[in-house]
Image 1 (cartoon, rainbow, N blue to C red):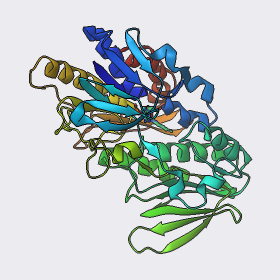
Image 2 (cartoon, rainbow, N blue to C red):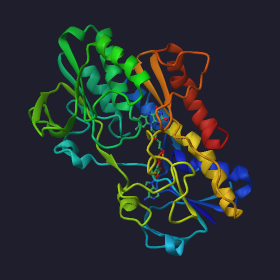
Image 3 (cartoon, rainbow, N blue to C red):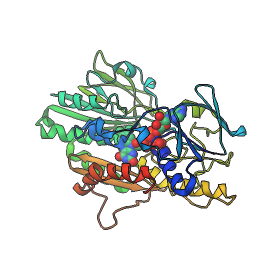
Image 4 (tube, protein in one colour):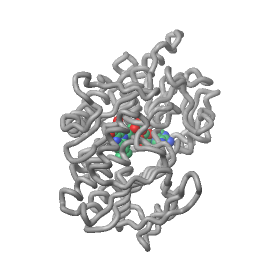
Length: 391
Ligand SMILES: Cc1cc2nc3c(=O)[nH]c(=O)nc-3n(C[C@H](O)[C@H](O)[C@H](O)COP(=O)(O)OP(=O)(O)OC[C@H]3O[C@@H](n4cnc5c(N)ncnc54)[C@H](O)[C@@H]3O)c2cc1C
């Protein structure tokens, strides 16, 4: 029996590939949610280009035939006994385990955020409950400071915090509000992007919009009563108060708590996995992929598209008592929307080498065709290709 924990992007993709590999009837998927979201669309929802409804499908319609769905949460792992314990207290035995429960959003790590998020100009694209408030907040801006944040923790889609800043800057420009507003991008990081080629073009984007960047600054408090965001300098500890008309928060994130406290976790709390084969180094019948896996790459659905075939190939090898030889090179992709109809398609690997999927064009610049790929082609590839185990 193969058990998959988590029926998000990674879990469904792997389940579909296993069924295609002849494992129908041998796969159980543990997933508590009846809803499945294509989260990359939320950037466009926040920018008023599409709706949350377009990003939503029913989980039951995505689970491949031949896969049994256990609609529950996993509470803990007992890898020495090859079993997981569910929140209901029931246990489930497995021969092979694939762990893909995604990333946890830690709203409570920023003082005042739980109380303020989703209203009075405080918004976030990082949750389907709040993403509409991004668009509402942007439309309500008439003047003042429009503030975007990036935390000190790993996040899913590291480019998403700045995508919405560029869309907002473009929106304000198109609506004649550029002169009355100031757009700020506060980041706990030291620069815009890890890969120099993309850092260069995005710096030009920032300059074009006149966005004020503030690096090594981590959001620690939202004072909604005064409409002030408080940032801590990562080097000196000094606090800065930044008034806001709109505050888009990318919240701190971490491995899910039930992973952090499990025997499967590495020191940082993520599921330990060989960065090439995706096999757990201590429990050889366990594999991990997706946002919860301890892989030093940017956490994206695009990365999962390349991880899933490697994981399935290696799992099948291990099931046949062979060595796992397929390797993942850290490929990830961040389609950085830089305005309405503009996008930098950043693709790279563990070593920050650029890995273009479209070799005949220059992906190191803002392009309209790549925007159309994100807007129209990638969602279709997701629903009809990747989640069907075909891409
Ligand atoms: C605003 C935004 C923009 C993004 N933009 C892009 C982009 O442009 N390109 C891109 O490639 N990626 C993008 N991403 C990232 C992408 O959506 C994620 O990397 C991807 O969905 C991760 O897949 P996953 O399967 O690891 O986790 P998820 O898809 O989040 O799924 C995890 C699943 O595990 C389940 N689960 C949780 N806890 C348990 C438990 N205890 N037991 C059982 N199941 C559990 C959850 O219910 C969930 O269904 C974006 C994300 C956001 C939020």
